[in-house]
Image 1 (cartoon, rainbow, N blue to C red):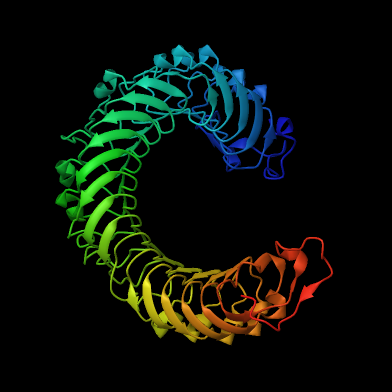
Image 2 (cartoon, rainbow, N blue to C red; image 1 turned 135 degrees about the vertical axis):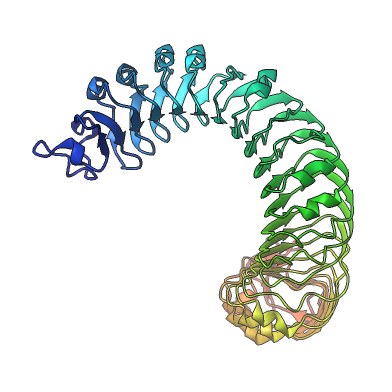
Length: 509
């Protein structure tokens, strides 16, 4: 067996002079018969040795997460007592042989993430003791869901289509269902004991069932379907629910207040629907939310006061709504609020973990607080197209991880601080359409900028030599007091005058 795998270095103790029953990867019965082989993630390659087929007492075979190849190992079919078979995450290919149905003791069958093709063998339906099956991420021919096992507790498949069989309603033991990224259509059904449901990226339509019977549900992902109607109010019964993903559907109406009372909710995503009204006022009060994503809907009013109440919230995505009020959270990492109706000042108290603050296209006003220097992890700061006033605080220059700064289309005044030249990570700077004055600091020429826009201000003087390049020709327009030395060939009036230059003796911008 070891020789068939090219004598892998991970198995140096597999020698002819030692007893296999003493190897950590091997389990044996009292009489010395090999009953288990566990070589998961051992970086082995090659084919499966025919010698496995002589292990007639083998009940557990785990060869997952390696680089094994070839067709389905027919030798395994001789192991009639096999209960656990994991060949997942390898490079197996070809058809699954119909004789797999002869492994009547199988309780777990993992063939996922290989290159198997052809049809699902109907003989798998003979595996009456099967509890856990994973066939996803292969190259099977698309076909309807073929089986229903009375004892099945976990199911993962790919390349299935058609409707969910009514017989699934009889799978009283099913707790884990993953049929994501298929072409399943039709309406949803209710199962009583489900804990995890992944049905995202299918063709499901109709409403979410009003009567949800799976009271132990922990994770529900129905995103990227064609579901419509309201989010049912009886989600309040799902007291163990931690993950609720309903994004990219056609859901409409208001969010039921009961969503805000779910005691264990951590991840809540309903982006890209037709939802409206206000967000539940109690959201975040009863659970430790980690992520809220309600963007691309028509929500109005305020972000709930309790949103950060659990002290764990790290991501808020609420762009493209009509929300008006912003709460301040110390734990946030990502905050995307652009294209709303937020008013008042930008938040001055945010925690040091914040990396992305995107609040363009709102109605924020007032000055940018010098407390932004406390946002030490900030990478992206976008607050363009608001009503901000005052000066740009030099404290922004202390944010050494900043890569993008956009404060365009506001009412900012004063000069650009030379300290910005120390922002070594900055590659995008947009301060256009403000009331900025004074000269452009020469220190900005030390930055590795790929995008620069300082147009439509009141800047004066000469453009620094390092910024006086063709790539930034449009970066300084509509600054009447600003001039530069540029090649005539870079201007639309003189492609034939390549050696002529305009010197900084006139106001060229």
